[in-house]
Length: 420
Image (cartoon, one colour):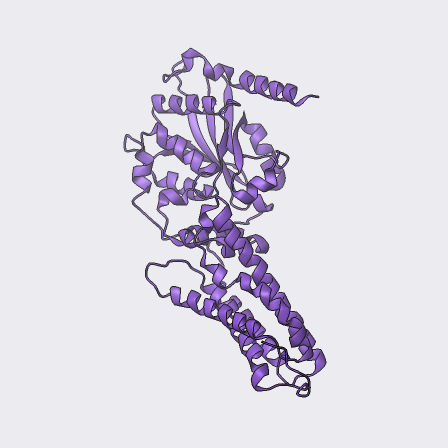
């Protein structure tokens, strides 16, 4: 079936669903029988898939006069869209708003065992109608797509901003001046902890902007945080903004943690253990097998650090992932480590290596010391102490062992030294 025909069918289906909401009689006034639409926010608990770990939410419009209960969901994306992976790497993600019945929207969440709670809001009739009309317009195919940002413009912040628009900024005024002291990094680690590779990747990739305290308004990038904020907010009339709360689905997974994991001890312990192992295996007069094991371990560290450092610099310099800008972790996950791979044959054989490699190892160590120094500057706020504790001891031992071959040559005194 031709693609243009499929697009036409989707547009007609969307218009058929939304047509009753787009009639002139649906302007900012009550329905003909005197009942205005009801507006609610449904919040879904986290799911097992990595993209579902932060939870989700949507706006529900219940229009009793028309018999419609529509869920407006800002969280849809398509893995099969052209250039999806490249756009993801560049930070050019495209999400879209989809309108469907509430029952259809909840079906997949029920099958996955995810919970859902609906908060009915106490809005004035004109405010409720304004939300309904804006969402009906926004869900049209030509308006549905938007440029997604994980922290500042996602499915939850869109819900917040639609409500704030109807309340003429009252929601922002109540939420912007207060803070729980949370940060983007803390929330990312808390919610991503169940997927270790994702949590570790976010921890390494996030720069200093992820460590500034958030207002409660900014915390609303997490759906459950928005639900908690709405429960405490007031309407324009001074009443509680949430009129009623209804549990639609029980949460059978229980994946959401109360706090981020404490990683410092584990990172420091791993770093010290690696440093001690490298110090023992790469002793100047160690046997052939320990030297080869030590060289393999050193090569793994250097390769991992070098590749990760290139990724961090690429995110900073060549993408629109703003949360990765200014990331100091490249000083620890240093691309210069890739040059040190050339020292592995000498380490494995117990021979001297070239001077530029020894100088490179010292430069990597100096970068680690700089990362530690930056932690004490009041205008530098990046929370990268975990990676300093993990990698600084390792870089120190490797720089020491590479330099030590000169002072204590092993078993190859009679062999000519490589030229510096």
